[in-house]
Length: 246
Image 1 (cartoon, helix red, strand yellow):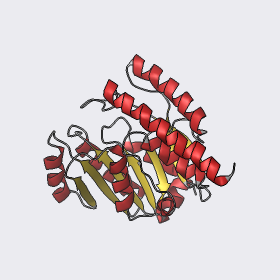
Image 2 (image 1 turned 30 degrees about the vertical axis):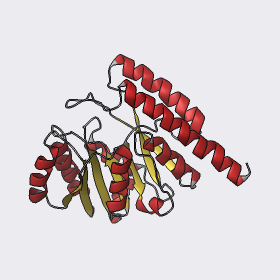
Image 3 (image 1 turned 120 degrees about the vertical axis):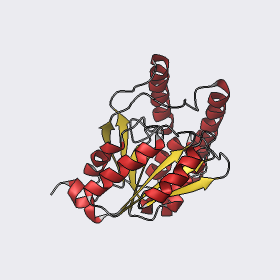
């Protein structure tokens, strides 16, 4: 019996953070439902609608009436990516939690790849991009960022910003997140590692964005991210070390 079959006894919560993803989010929900039905698992699907202004909200209200085992958690205003993830983790009710972004740069049909690595001794399976499908400047910046962050935070995975991961819900009995921006991905991986949970990794596909635009690549946001990362580094790598006496 392979691991995908073995996980049929474990229920799965799937959620997608959504901010101005009207062009992709409905397809992702429908594809997730098809994958989960094929796996034969007990499941729920959620979208965390984070104050979109492109009509995503109206689309999701309609979709919620038509798709079984699907619900939407609405944020009345944009609270940031970190709060969207926290809403998803808080709202999940099943044994396993899978999430990926609502912009369809990852293929939800590859969820079984993650499940194949979810052995009894594994707590979280983190994807890594086999090949990054972005403009050249973003690829270069991404590789530099990945190397620097991995070294600075001593992370146990090669691609901590790959938002295609599945984890056991019990993790969040011990792991609490505070970041509201994109640095929450680094915080998530480091706090899970610090809590002693076990990781596995698997390569996944990455696709060009077909709708909307990245919220990250502008000077103001990059500056804010750098400040957040420095603050997080001091909190997790210096203050924690001092408290533990290491």
